[in-house]
Image (cartoon, rainbow over all chains, first blue to last red; front, side, top):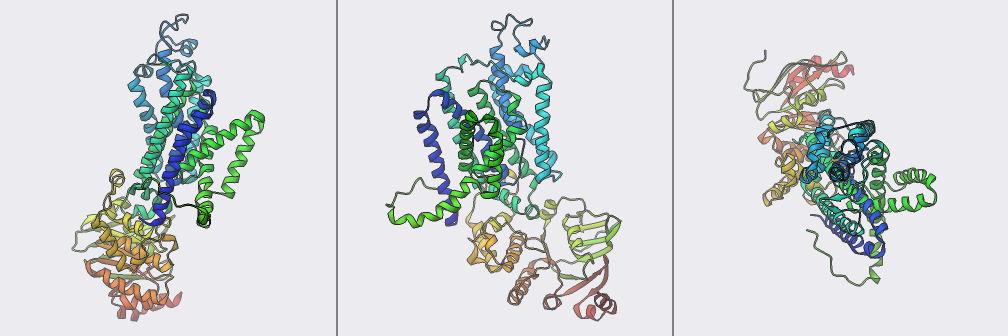
Length: 372
Length: 248
């Protein structure tokens, strides 16, 4: 509507285009498959970060438990792959052939009832979205209808992350325990461990991430997006304008959870396993840091932040593994204190205002894709 | 217990207690259709609490509140809003990060559920309505500005506009001229005269000059009870009212 709005929307599209160019063309042409697969893994975290932009940046709901939804999505995918890898032929040395190895090690002799539907890929794919969304709905409805918010909500999500981790580790006969679900091999007979498959999965991940970013953009630009901002500003006024605030919060929390879950499923496919170390408090907080560094109000920022922090983590932890966590904590403090709007905020608040001064040297450019 | 009446709003024997302290104590208050009622009273008399009770922000401990002969005690805030009661808060409560236009747009009483909001499209009719209201509240030239850059008085008007666009049958204003300049007060009094034409309005106000300029009927609250009620002259002449105000 306003010029400022149009500008920021156009800027966002330019950002989308840059990200697409980098992840679809630049990185695949520069990196070997090992490194590219690593980037693919980082990109799965970007799904979570984009969800956090909606949930935290837009609405002001800080969730420190996004790992829960990432993990649930990942585990649903892993359950299907694990069952396919545990055919009778593959597991004939077990005392009960045809069930996942970790069940056999835990003296389980029959596939538990809730595992049975995961023999179907269709069911598993639906579950990837549905299970985390339902979990988010239950948490969200219980909290937001009672008007629990702010730091209390953050603590509760963190507690949920801890509970789920303990549950997974404790019930190892059903979940694979601390080791997680490993030795995943094929998807409907297609070996996901080959280089070729990793390339394909990488591009699938990129395409879904871009779709995810456009979905988030659609939500932020809708009236619902403005209601979310209004809720962050003045929850009471929204309520006294006739909106049921809790429903909007539940919606955005579920959407963020579903986004995280898709990322989790793609993680499982690309990395080849899923374990509780991606579910608990530490990964959940790391995901918030990715989003904060990139800028919690910017979809582009969140994706870039995720890639940069993970790149930093890989480089840093290869040379000084024991210092990484300190660096991560320091980074978070630095972001909060020095540039609370993250890298995206630096670009839009500091860099863009400088551009007009450079105009003298700039040749006129054709305007990029129309904003709306 | 409570009887049906012809009043738009009827509070009967309403009480609310916070930790044993009765902020409102057996209050009876009736508002007619199309009436402008001003509620005055010393600090702590329970004026804002009465508004909180009507709009559902605070739950009634005892008694009955009926709007158009329907009990609204126990309704959620958004349900009460949808029935036609609008509330302006004491400090300007607007969406700082959105533009004035967006503030008004979000207040248009349509697309109020999640799906409706997601698929919401701006229609010419809706845009025209926003401009109409913006003209009324003296903000037509400021629609594109982020609300946080408006002056204090403009923010107060914006919030009034956000209520007007909902077209409530009962509008409740909590100190609408607080913090306004003299010129802004005059304009606000004009605005109020315009607003009350098609609806009932309850105004809480401290500024006696402003009350005189708009008041039809005045209710004086003291210690959670109605102390006096009537037109401005009779209330000002009332010895009990004088005592309460002088006592403070």
